[in-house]
Length: 400
Image 1 (cartoon, one colour):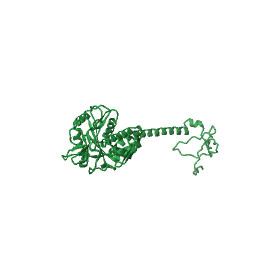
Image 2 (cartoon, helix red, strand yellow; image 1 turned 180 degrees about the vertical axis):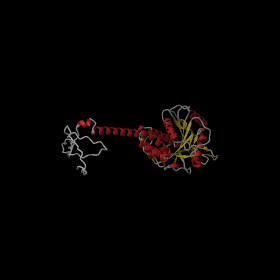
Image 3 (tube, rainbow, N blue to C red; image 1 turned 135 degrees about the vertical axis):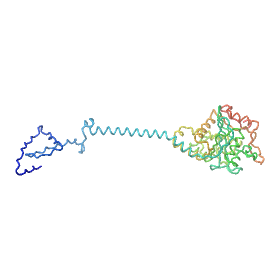
Image 4 (tube, one colour; image 1 turned 45 degrees about the horizontal axis):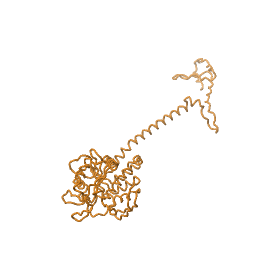
């Protein structure tokens, strides 16, 4: 910096020369801020600035790495490594929380989704409650394809079952043959019980079954035949047994005697075949129970229960063809499934009401199943009170 010029007539102030700093390389002391920098009488030699030593070159000729001591002592590398480990720990913690939330939320989400797929209909009567819990299950061709041609006009119920869970005693699953002769609650006289659904839908079917059994229906569940086929396929097929070769034109069942794993289409035909069976509607009711029991076993398999894909496929196939009364939801359906499994196990009771004839002729000349009036009263009372021994097959034809 050049020295300032002196004004004329002024005596210059003497400034002693600055001494060179001792120690050969210490920087000059900093000038406190706010003080003007004065020019010295002698020029000051600038102090050379030393550059930091470059790291040793690596084997490839490029810039080398910092000494290991610098990394270990928490220098540039030390602090960076610690931050990376902290960030990784935080990310792992967040992922763990998200996985836990997903595990907890999945059943709730599935429950809400499944409940939304169920259709509802007004079905229950205002009859006085009876002890225990009673489910009426109907298999209808009104909500699925594949109906069998029948003399009854309109929609029909090929399957009618009462599942009763008493206050004490074994759960009972009773198949009511669809051709059972019963009095219609509308006062129109006697007819096949499946005509009740055709004439008055679910409400009239409920009232007819209540009048026949003396049990008040608490839950009505109707399954379209397309749902049965879809459920069987969703669980990978079911193992069914029948001791005769069958080629039934109406149900389209082709069966080689023995036991086989059936797909949905075959299982549906198996549960509906009756014209090739000498026992007719009675044998069909037994096969329907076999199909439902096998479905229950497959659904309870951990490979299905713990597999989200299987859960969604099963729920979608079954619930899309399901109709219940307005008060029955997905929790009731789950309880129904547990009761169904119990009834088909060693601690349950299965069968049909006592039958007097399978060739009864109605007033209109149609063939029907006639129940034994001398035994049905006691039969339904013992079902209601859970008095039948567990594991027993009850009712049916005389001597069966």
